[in-house]
Image (cartoon, rainbow, N blue to C red; front, side, top):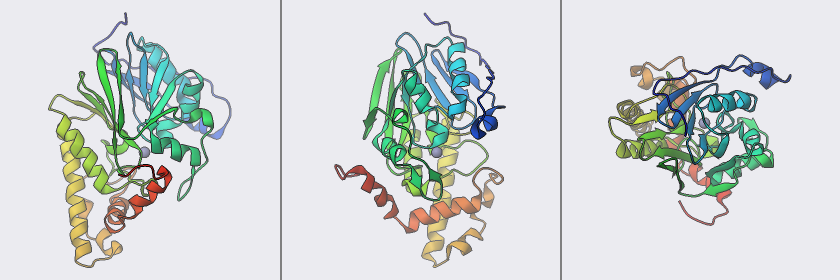
Length: 312
Ligand SMILES: [Zn+2]
């Protein structure tokens, strides 16, 4: 019923936005899409990359960027020949991946995410980055602990939770038949070190676990959608995983030798990787790694939000 094109389609739709700071900031953002397989596409704009599954059973969106971009994202979905969004899965709670939730929810999408996404969105954060509590309409309606499967459009779409990685509520999305994975912010493919949200229960150990899990379930043909950056392959992910392991182990060795964080940051551990100048500097990344390795209890703090009903 849906016409598919095997070639990448770029769609750019600008709308006239109401006057507010975020809208003005987003006025120039171009929303484009790229077809990955029949009925599966990735949408790029500003914020986390969006995955789309569509076909006779309806449209599933993976993440939704920022609220002022919703109309442009909806237009890009429509240009693919897809119906309006029926299901929306958030890979984690950050606003550049869930900022459109209220709009999509009000337009009829059923929002799903790991339990901690709903908890953190409802609470907001007064940590290093202040985030106001999300309005109820933006919150996931269906939450899960370990994962959930959607059986539609001729595929099984898995959302698989990974503990305490980029945050404490991350999901990897896996199209089993199409051999496509959306890793959210468990994978940064651009020219930057990855961000690890320590305030939200993230850890480098979890980032490595997530990368290993995806490496184990993919092959040379798998297309990998990163949270930020261009499309990746399994080989790209292996390189990224090896970088996380090498830096983490070098930091651990330095910690064991009694070096301070400042000393470790001055050692040039990240200099082998041509990733400086991006969103996260090598020095800042060393800080995330050091904090993960020296404060394992920090990842337990996040379980206070879990109502204690289960163990990780
Ligand atoms: Zn994030």
